[in-house]
Image 1 (tube, one colour):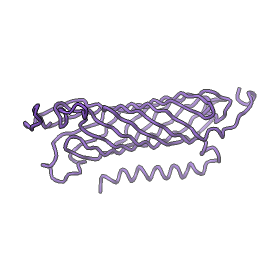
Image 2 (spheres, one colour):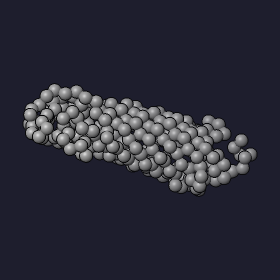
Image 3 (tube, helix red, strand yellow):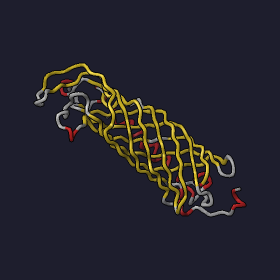
Image 4 (cartoon, one colour):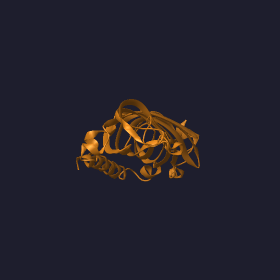
Length: 255
């Protein structure tokens, strides 16, 4: 039950935040809704005992092993919004951005791991991860002013990235929670709706696999190793489907 508590805190924060957002002046909160599709690249440190197999697939024993593991494929989706704090200029705004993310991460095989003899199935594990990146953004252009007469936009921001993960790796399964620093850059344009490309980079400290997070109760049921996150790089296509409701002001209003 202890492993569920961080997830409960994460979801409670989401509900409280969006309840607050729903009280923002309509249609502002609605028109700032963001939907994203992401490609994710993560790395993690594997450290501990590794089960070894020969070319016939027979178990030969355990050995100490350290390796940096990469995701072989990882995808995700996100939904979110941002809350303008103050106008910095005619076309710039300081805002708080928050997104809810859901990622699938397939980890590449470790050494002579469990599936090393099956090239078409070269993975050692899978992670399902939910996150809540919260950043303070400097925005310029159309999404800063929420107007159609600005044809381009860009943002730069930094903040924190709380995340909760369920990982099955080799013969162990565990949960983990962490809060990591994150930086972000966005660039986009308005063509009917606002569309953006986002780069997100976080320095992870999450323990994907560890004994204290293992779902197994007996130590002899799982290998003795840790898998600790190092970094995650995310490239996303962001769509703002309700931004067509933005007003179109004349040049005399913004220039």
